[in-house]
Length: 180
Image 1 (cartoon, rainbow, N blue to C red):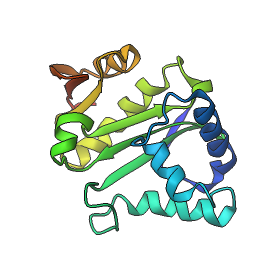
Image 2: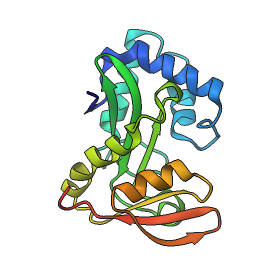
Image 3: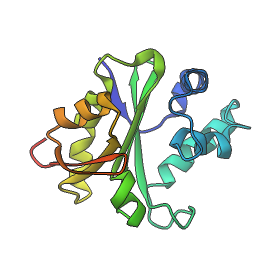
Image 4: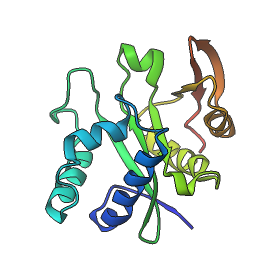
């Protein structure tokens, strides 16, 4: 059974394989995606143990308010879904919303590696994350997805997401975090 854990160096090889899968798949890689930012920042060195440890340390530090980050970014906590030593996906919670996140990005972002999709992992990650989101004082949480992303719509709705509206290409849902 998969576990939601804080990022850890022990899954380095599996994580890097998942990144390669995502690059081949192409669906999660765009200029603004989380994985694209990680590749730009750490892709030149995370193949080494020291470089990957630096990347994991960055993810842990990113949850603190005073961590260095671009002016447009907010503190966020990241968890990885793993089964044994196999990285299956990631989910992140942004602690606060800036103007862009309020319109487009929301509190939560997630992705599942291509070879692990269609197995309920995104739904499990979101359900597992909601108590952490609640502990941050967020209730309800804003989640968004592209209007055409039926899989994400189903994940959000399965977690109790209530559609607020559709703004351009983005569907905006509010998901309760209490009682999860």
